[in-house]
Image (cartoon, rainbow, N blue to C red; front, top):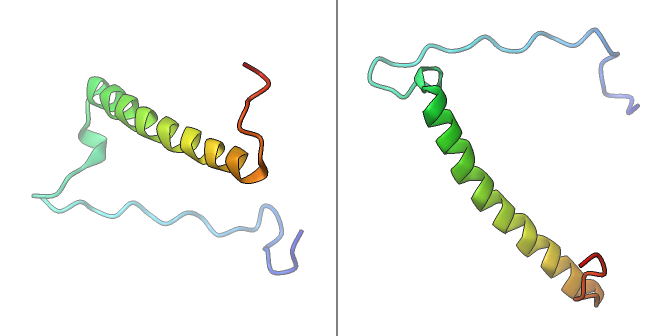
Length: 69
């Protein structure tokens, strides 16, 4: 454990939730359907980014073929 880290169990509590302005977006107001749709859209984008990074890593080390496939 690095010397600058506080001992386990003695960490400060997380910050309180700040109020959302009346005309602002409150993520707690999303319905289950909206959350599912948001997650679906994010997973697609993140998956593409991760696959691209993995392919670039394989190119960099000279192993373009994935032996698992």
